[in-house]
Amino acid sequence: MLTQNMQKSLNDQITAETYSAYLYLSMAAYFEDQGLPGFSAWMKAQAQEELFHAMKFFNFVNDRGGRVLLGAIEQPPTEWASVVDVFQATLDHEKHVTSLINKLVDLAIEEKDHATNNFLQWFVGEQVEEEDTAGQILNKLKLMDQASGGLFMLDKELGQRTFVPPAAGQE
Ligand code: FEO
Image (tube, rainbow, N blue to C red):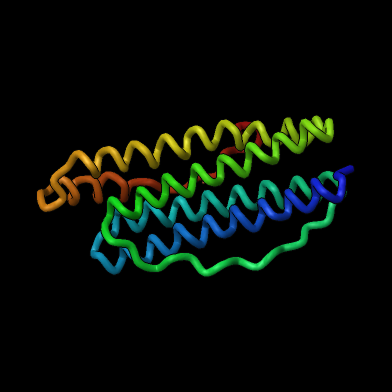
């Protein structure tokens, strides 16, 4: 059974993960407008991954006998100064999400809620990957001369990403 405090915090995380999807979808729209379909495809896959994260929390709250209550989703930014700016914002956002996950773990430990702590460990690992991926793309972008063919090549590379939900038990 979840405490009221834990239920509220997990519900807030459903909202935060859904906002992440919305943010990345907004970035996808920006890239479409910039004529960068590969970057857009990458962001669309990222948005799908975030909805998958939201659903993991949704299902967990239900599995623990809690009540899912969805909150309001804020409007995401719609404009960025450059491609580098978008990936800097992505990395910053993922660092923020990591801090939210860490606070949830702190609460689970404080409440001696081992089941929630165990559930959250998947997200602890996932956030390491999320920050690493965004950081690597940001580094590549910073290193390349954006006026050259580098941006085109990276657009092609990122366009190959598709979101495949992990098979049950291999999440
Ligand atoms: Fe759901 Fe990008 O963390």
